[in-house]
Length: 145
Image (cartoon, rainbow, N blue to C red; front, side):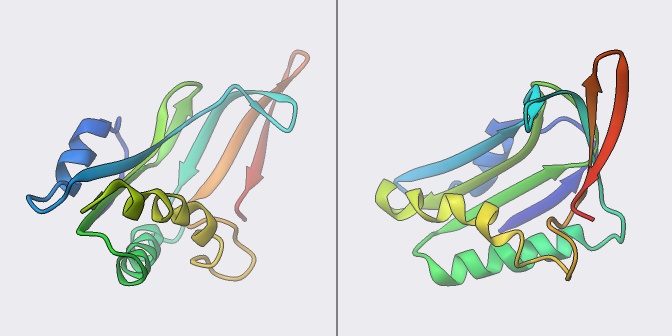
């Protein structure tokens, strides 16, 4: 199992290679991207911060829960911190399974499980700041606080 927080570009093929095992028939993956809008507002960038230094630990607990609940052979999860522009990759999650059916359900679990993995009052294990343009003004809106 690989869980990492990085401050550089994530290459999905490298994360998938970390998840692969000889007894797996497939690797199911999710690649998260920065989109150009949020709640009908134009997004310029998104900043991810590991404010308390515990994001990797929280994601590791979530990965262990996924591994214990589902029939998977291995998993790899890499989340990026820093300021990301539209179109850049913020997270890659890959599950190696014997068959594709075994991976289709758990590959979505990190996104539903992230809220439970966070301390009270925080939505995500990594602090998020959206830079949204409204007219000529650029605003920094925090979430995950």
